[in-house]
Image (cartoon, rainbow, N blue to C red; front, side):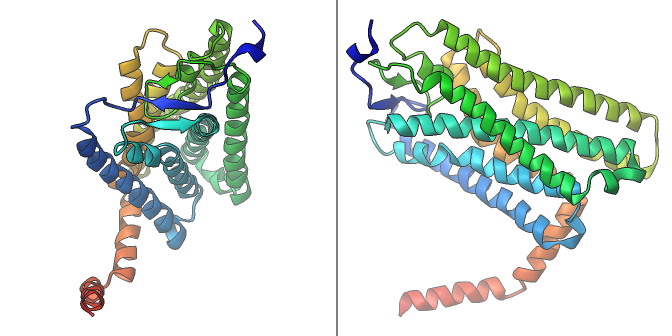
Length: 324
């Protein structure tokens, strides 16, 4: 059939997290609180790292960039999801749908490579401590961040190329709260078996290769740490625990969705919520609660900008202006 015979879909309908109208206000409150926590937690890490000279090291530079990507991961779809809780027909234009697909793969692909860079940083710090500042110079750190964004851009461009020219003539219902590539591809008016295989191969290659690199890196690091018993190694073990936890939380859902072929739509929806909402909020919690240096820097930041009586003075001024 010629492509010109298709009636082109101009918008998609997002089925969201639940069809129950009674649950919509409750879900709005829950996810609004989580989204505000993501923004405040990750921006606090960025502010802390940039404002405290003691944290101007490669590890915290990469951590601040991870927080920025986490904000991006949470923001590409969450504001749209929050607004959709108050409308009955959750529609999104065709171009906006493609934009969501572009950004989700850009941000998640970049984060995968950045996590590998953070593992490399820990490998150099623990296995080659005398050469750490030489190897992990400021220039190298910037290059690693640029590479992560470039790989994310190449990955998302290749993914979008599979979708942008597909004919869509209906149905147009996406069983999720954002346009996820596997779900949108299934709505095309042609057989997408080969396209689906290419999408899985592309995402699977990036996910599995990054994950295997991380497994090898952390295995070497753990073996090195195990053979040493100094106080610095105890600190390294604590840092490694945080890194490995973040890697597991991020790669678990991604690999399950894009590589595991037997997952259902309901499971995919839960996992999509996990890696777009819960992972960005867990990252600052994991890194700050287990890191004494970050907590000390945050306390210093609090004492600098939130001096005793300053908050109450601001509140009194706001109330006074409100009563005028």
